[in-house]
Amino acid sequence: MSSLIYPALLIIAFFIPLNEGITYVGALLLLIAFLGGAIKPRRTVLDIPIIILLASLGLSTVFSVNPLLSLQALGIFAISMLAFYYFPVWTDISHEKNRWIFLTIAVACILVSFLGILQLFFGPNLLSLYHTGPHYCGRNLRIFSTLFDPDVLSEYLIFILPLTITLFLAGRDFRERLIGILAFSVGTPCVYLTYSRAGWFGFLVSFISLSLLLKKKRLLLILLAFLILGFFIFPSFFSKRLLHSLSLSDLLSAEPRTLVWREAVKLLLERPIFGFGLFTFDEAVIARSSLSTAYPPNLFLTFLFETGILGLLGFVYLLVVICRNALKCIMDYRDRFETRIAAGIMAGLFGYIATEQFHASLRIANMRILFFFLIGMLVKIVQSLREKTEISG
Image 1 (cartoon, rainbow, N blue to C red):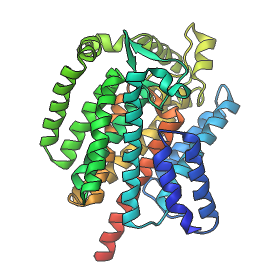
Image 2: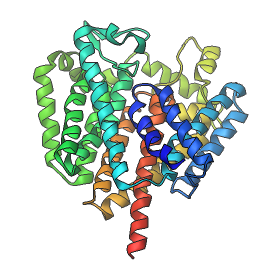
Image 3: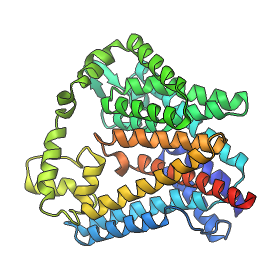
């Protein structure tokens, strides 16, 4: 059964942005290994936050305006946590295999980015199975590659690109460094081509965070160079999107963002403690207003509306515990390969959370799987370094 673990993790790492259905094949292999005794449960640093979060989601389900729909959503979250957080954290694989998991994530990023660039030249029908309708900024196609939506593609890249830089910086040979820099080089233009202003805000946050975590000021110079390069290669991006975003009122007034935010806050006053229930925003809004949308474009407001104050506090507590443990690990073991990878994941998480102030993609299958899988790999690094320290001590 133990022979199933490594292929399962590679399947998940590679197919997250390509086909979430196939990632469940990897999860099924991990389940088989778990039932066969090859994966043994152990305590993790996120056990208490996850229990608190699930309990708060359970309470919101009990008081939901649509309990059956919320119960289904709760089951999806619970399965995602078990299959893509707990199973990877509980596995016991070698350091070498862990390296290949991160390299596989970077290879998937290369493929997704390359397909996105091809989409620019051959049009949206190149990947017609991956969209319900093309998105445009003026006459310019907003690429979406295999993620269905350009905003989701930008958030995926923001989460992954800092990791690719740390693979380049910490790679032990030419092959690893090549994979890291290639993923960054083809992924960054794709962030431009999504025409996502929130995505570019997250991109800035992630790379500023990475330079601070690694204490490498030259990363800021690299970031500046790519911004200048982007100005010359994609002038329409800056003229039509980025420069307009310098006006905060323009960014906040993007239709129908502020209308949805305002309506969500107004309705939230009716059920502030337990919220309206998971995945019920559209139902609650349609019944009480003229708006029609699936969720408010803000991650924390979505949690607050659907799960109330308890659910939001549970999710924020989860993020706080992740950051506290990971940052301590990065500070204590700065020069190790694992901690540089941890810094890449943390920087990606910061950028993703910044972007989520204008979106709420955690409810989308690909991004939910990516979130829990990378958090699981991050916790695995933290716990591994702690165990090594205890043994050496």
